Image (tube, rainbow, N blue to C red):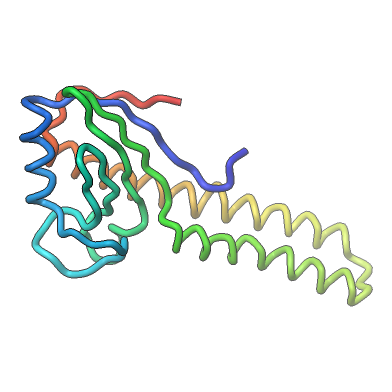
Length: 159
């Protein structure tokens, strides 16, 4: 079981590889840091040769997912994963119930089994409700934006 979800896609573009990369460069604000900032471009990030590592420029939710991939001969591959900053934040949230359980254990409370059950439920809820739900929504929005910019004719999820 992976703690943080990710998706891999293969795709085919319409037109030439060089034109598609140029279109992506025009619609991307070049930045070494993958953070949200107000811009009129569709993405922020880095593009080198045929590879890219970008985030959506939508303020507040665009930086949640990082899209990294490359385009070779009208075919490409993209990996969507949660940004490192958000992974660290969610790791902290996943540790809080465990810290609470440890504190409960050392307080010598009689209802330790109920606390353990609540710990498991809290961790599962954070992972499968909050993280998964946010990832599905934001990754789909970022992927749709990438499809529009790259003029993708065919896309398929792999794993």
